[in-house]
Length: 121
Image (spheres, rainbow, N blue to C red):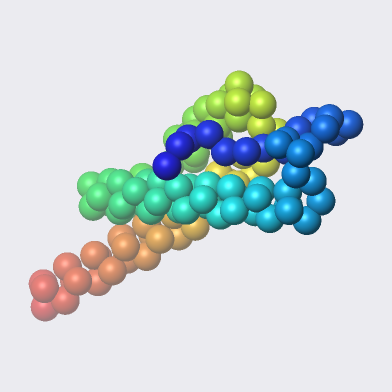
């Protein structure tokens, strides 16, 4: 599969390949579906890395890592700007991702502590 996807021309431009209206909407939705598949695969990979990372964390402060979250959000803001994406969309998306993965890590930490506590009994 090519990394190139048909995108909408700028407003006022003639439609790409002469296709417009419902046919162009259908084409673009197919492109979005393909992108979503790639994005989810990357997010799943990122989640697996976070899960492995969590195995090395021993306390809630290390899981929450507010300074690291700020670094990631700043980097995402800059990356989005360079790619021509509205930074607030990227930052909002990553803020939600960080919140959910932090919750997952806290659950993993609690489960690990509970298992260790049971093993000590």
